[in-house]
Length: 296
Image (cartoon, rainbow, N blue to C red):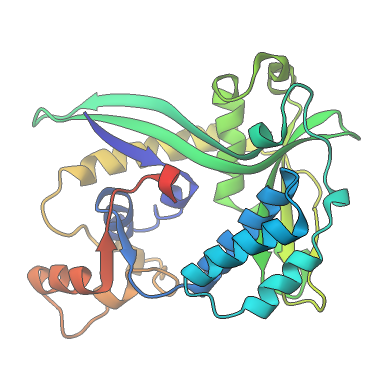
């Protein structure tokens, strides 16, 4: 049985069959250093440790160690983010759930099992990690908090971007459709009574000093049907691409989606025009490992 994992990052690749194939099926990731990724992970780690009652000193030491091991280049900025962490902006954890259960809550839900014409059996999982689960006292609702390190100065613009986030829509959809498999029974009432929100928590690292913020809760109840279609279409795409020999079509070029794509150097290289040369370039520029969100 071959596992395939669908998470928000996978859904973001649906703009292009090749990006989708190389990321989700082939498991390719750039070998080059990516500072925003390391910075963001270190900040998430610090927030998790503080929520779990680690001291400032201990949380900072562990997060900075992680950052240094991943070739971070802005340690002073990172520490300034840590020093402005404000736990008072967050709500209480739901009754019966402690900090460990409510921070970095990973889910992995079997979605569908498929046997293809060539006899291979695939099982598709829905995966993701919720940074923090808490109660919103004003609405008596459950909130899924997601931390984002934002380099944009304008907080309003950051919030507007988050409202259109596929990641937020995916989290909301998963918890509305499958939350009973993720949360303990006493919290099911929030799902059944539509008292669920996703709440962005941007860390404005360009501000001096940096600011930890929490935006208004967002509901995507009106988009549940569209998310049903998107996830199902993504699963069908994965299954068709899984059995494809060679490189998938770079159809993201049609909609001009290449500028932020990890595979831009491959598709636009004038020196690697044929498929074999592009495969060689992929091996040179990207590592290859199982696409498994649990290990990210």
